Length: 140
Image (tube, rainbow, N blue to C red; front, side, top):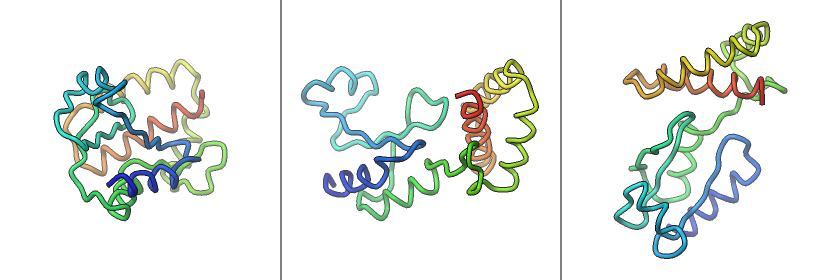
């Protein structure tokens, strides 16, 4: 799996929305691995906006499976400074939130972060993550 993981890291090295990293749980990363209750190796964890505990990845370990998962679940393609790859829904939300004050955007971030841990349909969870990304990018 290491070659596929390294290839994935190279693929997303310049990404502003995806970080591919690895930790050696038998060396300097031992304390970090304990804090996330990692017991078997290799274990893949992924973190979505606002998620500090991480979730266990259960998909394939080859490059194509890993890349597909990242593209469909983790990669944020919408950039508020250059919204050419944003959907119409995202563009509309960007314009709506640009018109709001920074305090109003912070309130929205807090509200959405509170909802992030709740159970909801996958498409609603994706839209929640997209809105969080947009809000954080506007003031980032």
